[in-house]
Length: 474
Image 1 (cartoon, rainbow, N blue to C red):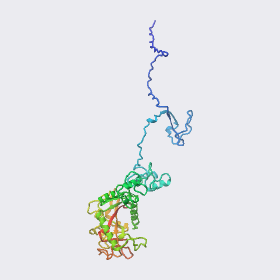
Image 2: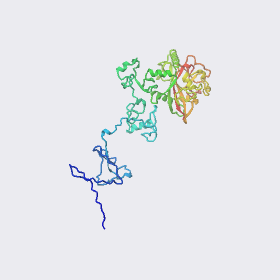
Image 3: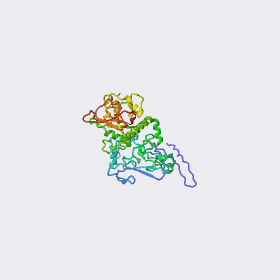
Image 4: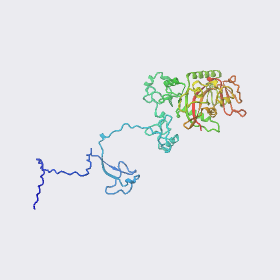
């Protein structure tokens, strides 16, 4: 039996005159075809290597290829134990193709960050609202003492914020700049960066003074002039045009520290704990109130000639100022939340705090309080005290609860004491100071019923509010 077999089809020849003939054989594709391998862009390759912390990332110790690793590197996950060398070849693009990141910023830490020192409490914020990296001043100083933090190059008191040369305080972050050009840094003990800027400043001779560590309360940008609250006449004028008004003092300012010290040292009641101060506001009264007060001070000084004389009970170490001006506390009632929520004055006529800031102390309101009406030992006058805990007894009407915390406020005032008449016994019939005197000094004694000092004036122009102290009630 025969079978018919066809001849295999002959493949066409590729006739090439320049070389041997080649037969093209078709290749059947495999069921799973790997992805094509891109040719390297250059001859640089990198081997991914896992090394222990005591090895250098630049020159890691790599075991020979034919030997397995004998020791497990430190801090290596068990899931990758033994994976010391990867044979995967990674290509590195040319340097020109690598994107350059130029917009990296040193962002401040988040408010919900954890203190870098104690690693327990959330970070706090400074009085300017800038988040810090620590929870308290104790941790800041502890970080400096541990040697792991570098002090701020400006204040040298607190650590630098990571990535900067300054701490979190705004006064350190914003170095004083030239008073005129507002661009270049001013020379130390100067307001200008150069003589050119100084000479371009109108009336520059009147501005030759050192700058303080307190930032201007109005612009919060430039440093205030020494013994002033503002950086110059422009900011001063802007605030005076808004008066009466309140501006919050930074907790790092010397004024804040002075008021705090006076308040805490004058807290003398043994059964009352010294409260924590929440904030202090500088009061700017109207020009009318300031002029009235200054005229009265000059009048008292002209009559009594007290400036430079020693205090009668000061042992000769303390001298009186013009008119014997002193800072004294006053507690009263309040209807709004001024100083607690914000510094906005209210229009409620029953809010004694806002009325005093707007118009000053008024004799027609003497004795209208439920507590003050019962304790007018020295007649119808305006009462102050050098004891902050005593004034606290008279401002139950200022007690406010805000988000679960109880607050009170107290006014710290400038008072023209002049020549004071010391009294230890009550005299509720007084309508003016005794003849030849400008005020009454209620003094504690063993025979009297006064436990703490009082100062009583009988002229509305004799006092003017200066600070509003907000403190927490334990």
